[in-house]
Image (cartoon, rainbow, N blue to C red; front, side, top):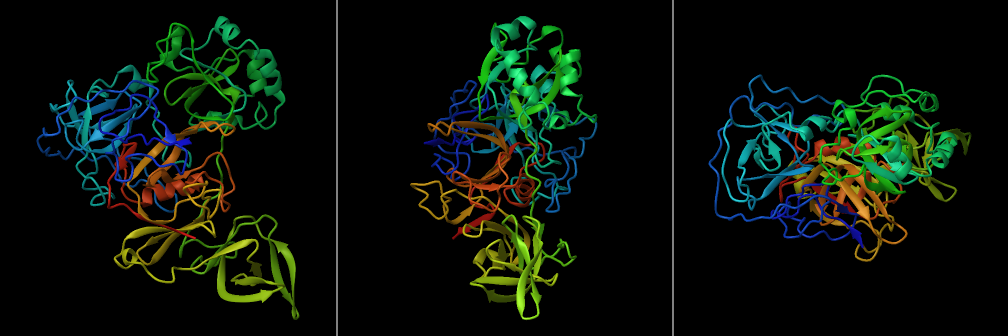
Length: 567
């Protein structure tokens, strides 16, 4: 079976390390209604036992005007983004010191979970601490949405409570300080990513020469391959490792020859160990784990040490970057309906089409015949006139540019034939067509956005017995900026850290970005709905429940955006 364990499935268990999501399509316990299922969760860190009484409550908090964290929906359907506003001077703040910290509805670990926070997040709080069951250290109230946020009225506006076993008022805490790089919501991928080509060690400090000899005995052989491998090695994508630095990547071969050392984080100087965010960093030896082929990891920083580029994972472990192929992610994204235009300048309103096949041709009328002439770029969007004709056994659609396209290499999108109740009531909703591999986002009866997706690779098969996507009417209930997925099926083993923009709507089924492939428009997943990273980013902030500023996830059952999945 593929494992899928949502980061927040049980109020009795708080994850102290990175949790795992089962790969798409399995039946996750306790996720249909949000974060309050009764499943146990395995983690890389330790679990905090619950001794909470379900009856205690905390007083209602009157939030001061200082709780103005900025826009609740920082990204719109154009992809434009705004940073969160800074807190006013003097605002009390709290920092998160575990990988994933739960946000509770009340100052009580047995109360419903309303969200999650990522290590290093700094959030506005009150100037008082609350006592409550399950947390001897006490709870702090954190901000949700403020009155000026776009998210107001769309979800939880009162924030929640975080246990001070998982957070701290000391913003100089080593984990808080080292985890200052938070997810980059202005880009299609919130972190740097890489997929492992040749396995190697994870370190808890910058490895010494003796460490390298002990734990990478075949390094010379590995580097010889890396130097010339155009897909996974030094010739490929080195600028991707320079993200957030603002300077071009040094030549990796020259850096190796010159034994370049640069950009070393201050908290790693003089042989210092990484802060123990992963739960493994306190080991006596430098090597604290391994990475394997097909692992996908996320990174918050890179630097050079004696010629090799080293990368810092989101849980603050050190790994040689030459073990990974840096990930760019697909350039593809969808279109805003009625706003964006195609290559001819025609507005993309219904009907329109996406070109799904490579090598698509324009069909042009020559007298009484249709002939193929110019090429049409793969996955381009084309405005249509609505006219259809049949030629040579296939249907063709007329574009507003004057040529015709055929059904073999393109897919036509039209508005819903019959409006469901939620549309007539003005709700936002997502219409996913498995046969067409398309998604249309609506605001009531108005089309807002459209794109290509990759659903389960088994197409219209039985979701109970195959890698197909479950069909039906669902509501999004739980969202994470990033979450981790893995599989232990023989022959299909993988682990993908920090899959971006995950939105659960039923059991183990979710919409999420896929940074590891670029075949959107074709079935590909294990059951989830794969989106191009930029589409996932835009739709994450379009749908409900909204994720408050600086939170890493949020949950609100029964009221989220409708997801209608059909053949």
